[in-house]
Length: 440
Image (cartoon, rainbow, N blue to C red):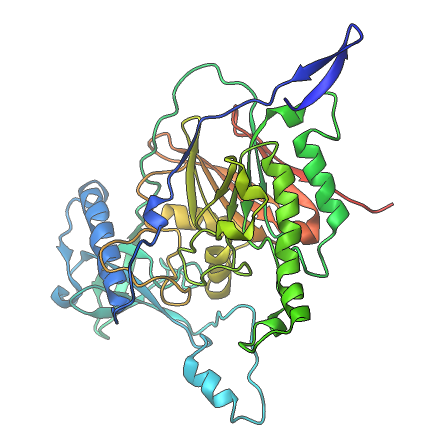
């Protein structure tokens, strides 16, 4: 029971709507694996093998008259198709050697937000070799290292491969939603709470809590139609000065634990009212490399008592009433923003879906676990909702595929900076911002 209204002088109880939830994080969970010196090359081999099996059947409909060759089998002037992994040669890409030389340099090197340079170029590689790509079909600023493509072209006298056309994997197949009369049900997304930072406004977040738990009340009883809450990373911010590896005083221990205790109090209020998923982010007390493992339930002694509280992986995949969701806490999009360009952040989200890979820059510039027998970031089915947290502002768009795929893309802004969460209606996939302000 959530809210109440008066009916003939008697209070009428309003029940919160329910949605059938299924967590699909199994492929992101690391169980018992240990690092035994394995190299990251295996991830690229697995990725290329999987993507080649997807792209090769598309070639007869795309270019039926052309043969598929390996890089080693290219012949000068002869048109063909090559399937391989993009490597982006970047002049400004940070290097560990540069970091080492900085310590001995009187003039510190500039650390730009974006590492793009006009001299950047693309290289295509497979198991047999690599070749530099030429021509205007592939714009280096759009692509990143790790993307697998099929390219049509021919080898030039300079030994480059002149690209004439490009084939991406495109949107994966999508599970059909069961047909029936759907009712208004809402999922709320929030990220970047940063409890413990100077930007965190306790009153602002308490307003959010009171609104979605139904304590503020509203004419249309929208709160009772909220069936799920997703917290997409960076829920706390712990001072880096406390994490120097030195023994902490009791005062410092208190400073370290205080943000988590405060978060637990707030999450307990939420978990008492509705189901919620919390994902780790780059600033949270979790492992650094993707896939990030669930935040330990011991951190939340209050909230974890409720069976509505779910600590999840990042990336996080789940299902609500047959609707498929997948999302991240934003690290994959932030990395694409460093090594490529787009007019909007939501465009990066769309690219990863069309490339069928959540984090193409891992493990090159984005930390990830050195898997040897699987590549969990490959997108084998098209989600109905794809979200990413900790972005600068709220952005959304809908994309459709040739096989009637339909996906709502959502960029969730940092709540501590914007006071904005996002609401999604499961009935029609309409999406809008939910803003809170404490300014008088």
